Image (cartoon, rainbow, N blue to C red; front, side, top):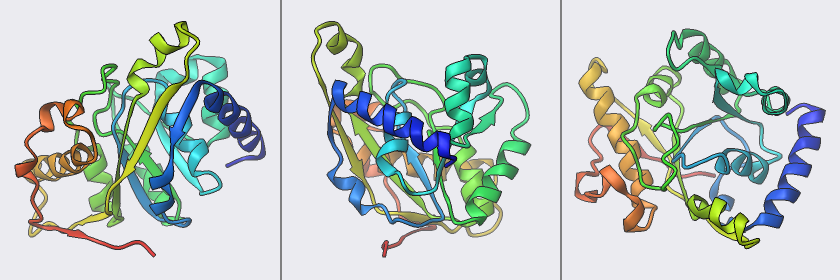
Length: 225
């Protein structure tokens, strides 16, 4: 993170702590050094800056839609935090190449497999981008879930702090037998999403509510140092 990014992190963390009561205990499970891919659910604007500042000073990068840079303030923050841009309507080749370079340096990469905000906190169908990066880099994926932030807007109107909770699962490594075709990438995507769902209260699990579908086939859990 650049120097101006560190300054932004301090300011943003102060603001977030004023408007949120954060249960961050499980974030201590996350190693100080990577490489790791962090896969988390995506509710609204809140969780991305929050996870970035809570994991500081780890060397961590996010992936943001290219439209983020249309806003001068958000674009400045994204640049300061060395975020990657992704074109959701076009080619992702360059984004994946940059992601691989970040992981090769031993850094963290945060990805929201749903690709878009749920707003209500309930899980939507995951997309295979995180899987493509994980398979190419052979880097473990850490599932992280959060909840509470879906009511931030109503709480702000009431001048009330929002309770925001993080949960952290065991890292997994994907070990496909044979070619990772479209069907297998979907299987791995769903397995990452089920592991995020497992960390959530039942009412937030959405399309991944049936935890009986969790499988260890071609997947290995690893322990963090």
